[in-house]
Length: 120
Image 1 (spheres, rainbow, N blue to C red):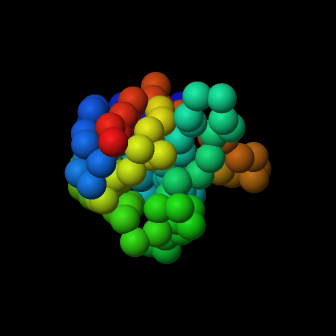
Image 2: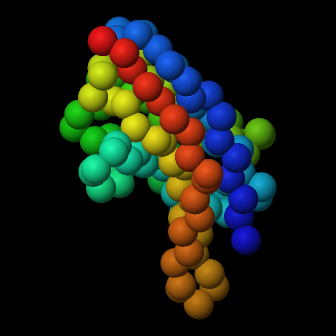
């Protein structure tokens, strides 16, 4: 079982910045990937950014060049640095961790979500 604790959401004006943090209860070396998803009212949850165990990263087209995902292995924490925020970035942001059992079963774990609101 992996527990994820998020922090860092809030209210910011358009053009501003926020940094989200996600602390895992296990060594992130044990995880296949960690990522950030978001869900706006009336919309489906979507992938924002993901960092794979080997270090490669992928981003949604809508956030490329503005958001950066990175990790601190010593703190078992993944961060999402969000710059040049836009009102359309407003959503609840969820941290996700993907783990794989020895038998090859994939497990997904989710944080509780943190609200990000960008005012125009």
